[in-house]
Amino acid sequence: MFVVLLDLHPQADPSQERILVLLRALAQTDFFIPLLICRKNSLLADSAAAEGLPLLALGSGWPFHPVSLLRIWLHLRKHRRIILQSFGGQAAALAYLLAARRKPEQTIIMHTHFFTPRMRHPLLQKSYAAADCIVCGSSAIASLVQQESGNPPEKFRNIPPGTGYHGYSERGEQRNGRIAICMPGALTEKSGQASLIHAMAALWQVEDLPPWEVRLVGSGSMFHFLLDEAQKLGVLDRLAILGEQELCEVLPHCKMLVLPPGELVYAPGLASGWAAGLPVICPALPAALELVRNKENVLLVAPNNPQALASAILRIIRDPNLAKTLVQGGKNALASVSEERMCADHFVLYRELIAGNGWVAPLPAPTEKDYANQKFVDNIQQKQLSRSGSLQSSLKSISGHP
Image 1 (tube, helix red, strand yellow):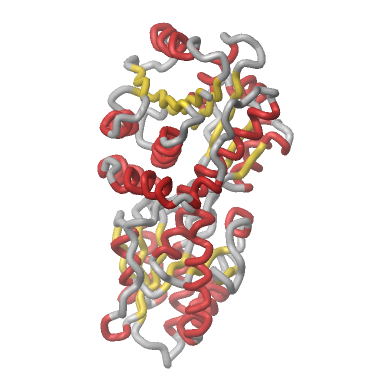
Image 2 (image 1 turned 90 degrees about the horizontal axis):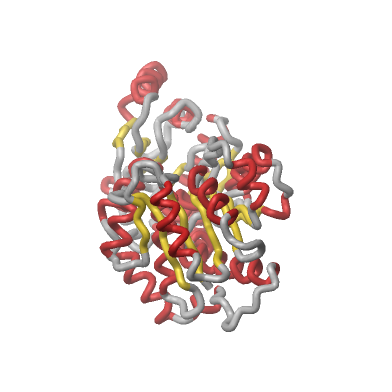
């Protein structure tokens, strides 16, 4: 079965790291024949080419140039039945144009929004109406896309974006018993750092605590505001804003991870904390609730509630058994947000769509059982570890996710 992954982002996008993972996994199977279509000279194209993955790079600055469309059509016409999976608004419009030039019932159209939905192209309304399935990174994103596109709920499938956590090491002992509390994410108005700083003011009034500090990992327009707020509340000497950093290097030196409210997808942040062996405090929002269990693998708190956040931090500091429970629960839940799980969920979805279209499959598509085969998993993980460092660093810096 021919599977085409379409990405037309002119600059690096956090979904591209997941596209590479899916492309590698597809290439490992005997049933699927994958092809990546993206812009020439992009980080995504360079990384795929460096790994020898199947690639069609579009040379024109405008992906809808007639020459580009002709090149794609010549590739697709060799295959009677194909799955077109788009990532982003322009790619969704391109998928619609390509399917419209093929015979009816020969093409399955999938649109994918792992992180932020982008639906600004004039062809998108028709493209989403024609889609067989829309994959979203969380129920929050699915709700937004459903409102904008008008598609029925049965067209949607939630698949969290898989996260590679193989470079993480577990937390070591803190020097001088100092407690470092980490919150990652862009420093923007709705990201929640201000709520954490107000929680710091509540913690500062507790006299019997060991030395502690808060470390913000990220950058953005709220940098000076957060410093001023910490100064007003008298906690500036306990605050460190680290800028853009690799979480796999920061988290092993921290005591706990606090995830910011307002995110549309929580899988990457959860995977980071769980892989680093940290207790995780998580806002009780729909995008998080579908992935976690309160007091089992996270401690849930009401979003944007400094007092509730301060109380959760105190509970973890004062209750070592709770902290151990959260750490162990996180280890157990890590596979649910892994890259392997994301690929397996896609393979199951491909099978369902193929069956729903009445296409006869000569071989069964891989499912999660394939990942019980350690050799199969090792082959994928080995390629993950050898991926282009420039792509991974760029994606992490722009997404705020590991």
